[in-house]
Image (cartoon, rainbow, N blue to C red):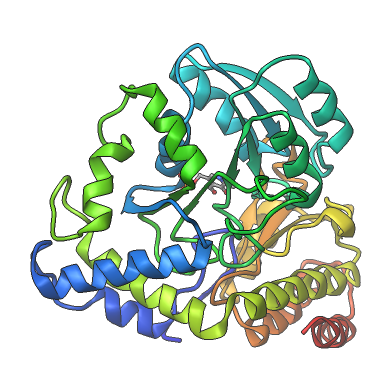
Length: 388
Ligand SMILES: Cc1ncc(COP(=O)(O)O)c(C=O)c1O
């Protein structure tokens, strides 16, 4: 990898050379058949990854555009949604819904914990909800949602499942052909971005709608959007030589290569790898007295939110670690200053994470908090082997 630093924030994540090479390929016109073939392939690879019977969309935009596209095409103004929030990004659906005149109810967990199936069951029994939003892995807390428990409840109540996979897709199971306890109980919409577990630079919004979600779009007739109206994009996704808005040609090259790498590794292998990475990183850091905010049972495999031991200064720690070439992120809201976030997803490798564990230990020692780096590295190696 030609990267000079280890970008272990919760996205963007490390980009590998073949993706940089693709990104730096000659820019061609968006109707040039050579580009059109690549766009078509990228869309097909996305469809294969998410296994949908409906439509997929790969357009310029960040994860937030993908959230907007998911919501405005399925829920009309005045209809009601239930937001299941396990942190900052779950909460984002509240403002998003309100911006479009959607009635929003929310179930918020304490940060670090999950919303429980019992709470969801009780809330959904209260009235009709058009859709329920679930954040697969909340990037602020490192908490994963329990899809096996939640989806049957949501579907039993006739609501659409909108899954935010921005910090999960291509690392945690997201299969739109999977049934959850009944042949009709499936994920209806998945939205994601290019920059996290897919491992491509930021800039692409990716959304998939199944047939049920497409039927919801049809009922809305006119959505309060133009760029985000999927009806403007369906002709392009089915024939990328058509034009609606200029696609980010070079990013599509990069994404096509990123998707190739995802499929070359295989989704099931990736899921196992990420599970092992998450467990091993958290176990190793616990050797330094650094505990994850989330209990291991609910922890996401893609990133961890790690509480500092007494006396470690956030800014000092991250700056010193950064000088050693390891970049981690601060925490959000009330966790700012008391926890940091470390990503372990996408094209991140076992070697990188092992080195990061060692350098985190070195940094703590340097800052006057004596720890045993060798022991933590050994723990990482053991745990990662058990997992993979
Ligand atoms: C779970 C989740 N959803 C949505 C978003 C928003 O994505 P973006 O920042 O690409 O707009 C993020 C960003 O980190 C996220 O982690």
